[in-house]
Length: 159
Image (cartoon, rainbow, N blue to C red):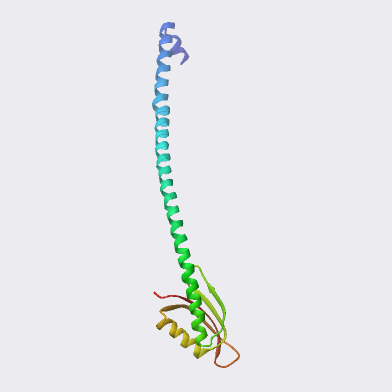
């Protein structure tokens, strides 16, 4: 290659070098600088879109928090009313609640120790038919006394 370059005159060598420099700068611009500029513009557009999406998500999160606060206070009242209602109606059947635990879904878990089975079943029947409540879970275990059971049940507002 050196022999090829040296066979030209100094003026032609300078012209070849100048053309090589111009072609190199052109190729650098076309294959490096222009794609980088386009990538920068694409990133800026994506950044703008992401910022707008973040603003929408923040607005929705604020709205959800407000709704949860409103619903949470309503749910807490509803759960407290349900707990009081269950405790009162169990008392009418001479059932002693040993544990009453409301949960976050609005249902209440109750535990009875040595409860008369017939009174417990009548009470559950009243809950579902008269009061419109729903017994989601029921677990019975026999005790040493005949006719009595230990029971755990989860009661929720009706369908």
